Image (cartoon, rainbow, N blue to C red; front, side):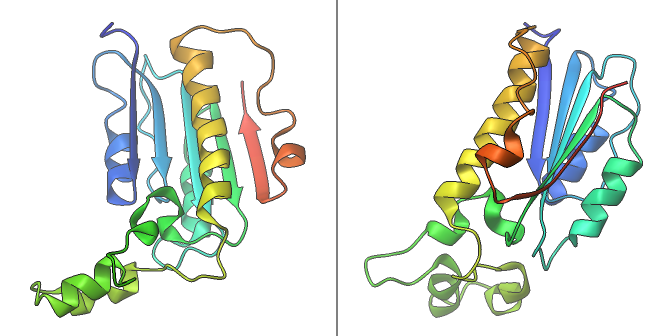
Length: 175
């Protein structure tokens, strides 16, 4: 159904998702770890911003500013002690020797890999991947079902911070 489209992206892809809201049928935008406000649109019904409070690539304040600069309906979910890559599975990728993807790329001589370290914020003290995925899945699924399925299952975000104590911030502007 091309009248019920959602766009989502992480980092620069989150900026792209925020900028594609004027495309036909786009009703939901989900920028993850991005500092780009959602472009106003006649068809956009909801925007969900998510970011990590420990993000060293796109500061969480940038995600907050993107939220502030966007029209309602909008929500902001901030994950405590989460880095930039909490919204991907890159930190979980390892080879049989236990090397992460950056170590593999550097060892293999991939051009520019040694400069990508600042993007690779996979600190073992960060929020664990399984918990981050549960929060991300809950928030994104809730928005998608609410708007694209027109599902009236009540306020799916009402207990977000109680259910997931690692949600450090939740804001919404529904009107």
